[in-house]
Image 1 (cartoon, rainbow, N blue to C red):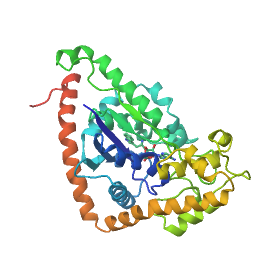
Image 2 (image 1 turned 135 degrees about the horizontal axis):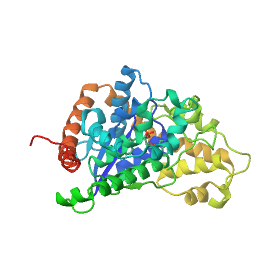
Image 3 (image 1 turned 90 degrees about the vertical axis):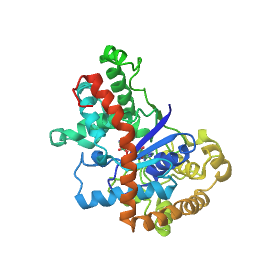
Image 4 (image 1 turned 180 degrees about the horizontal axis):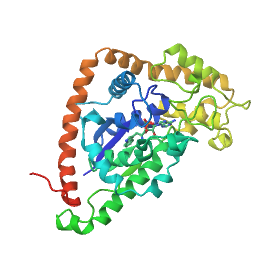
Length: 341
Ligand code: TYM
């Protein structure tokens, strides 16, 4: 059985990287898989969130999912904290994963910065919760941007260790050899790693202090055009071949963004726009506005009705729980926890 799971943190400014690397791909996968899309509020509080901002951002990510084209009736959309199974399974995984594995996570090193002693324990254990998100549903495929690759490799290691540690019991209980699937990451396309508009070496991120580094899903048309006009480039014109983008991270990034928005590849973009940057930037600004404006408008409409969003999340949570509950019951039996039946 094939099942897609993915999550987005409600931590402010959703941006073009989140859209092209993740949300747009969530939409496409709906035609091929049963999909579960989660607003991961438990992950968000691994760093401080103002309570009111957290609620607002949770509804905003939900609105973005729906505005982008995710169908919350045919699939499942919910926020993580409403399904206790995530936290429950994460605890078991805290006891499966090794300190050494987590010590290797580059995102923790980046986010914790110099003062690791001051980072929350949750920030360190973050990847275990992420593994629990995916495996509470035995999801087989996880669409994400490239920055999540290492976390998903850890999820596979956790699944494998659980399957091995409890192999005898798993077989005894009739689950065969593999209790948890080894989840496959889906990381693909020209925009799997969208970079900052100000620095082609840094990824586009919610936390970059410069708003000019990113295009936010809530930006209006003028802001989008201005940010693209001001985006850093180099003095050379656009090449005719992908090989010519070598060593030109800013140019490569803008071409990748265009390809992602237009559902094409870099070569096709260069075939059309080889030559001066000005013409390409104008076309990129127009395309960005054309693709993003309807989503922004729909997000605004949806967030004006928070009760309706909350109803969608409640319904999604109930359906998510119906899948995760029996899997958690099996986990408890495998581990040896006594439970009433
Ligand atoms: P988050 O909230 O940081 O980002 C959400 C999604 O957007 C992708 N993304 C990008 N893609 C391309 N270019 C970029 N510059 C860029 N920035 C972000 C991310 O890769 C992600 O797919 N840990 C996850 C959330 C999560 C999750 C999960 C994902 C929690 N549990 C289970 C998958 C499965 C995160 O922080 O994503």
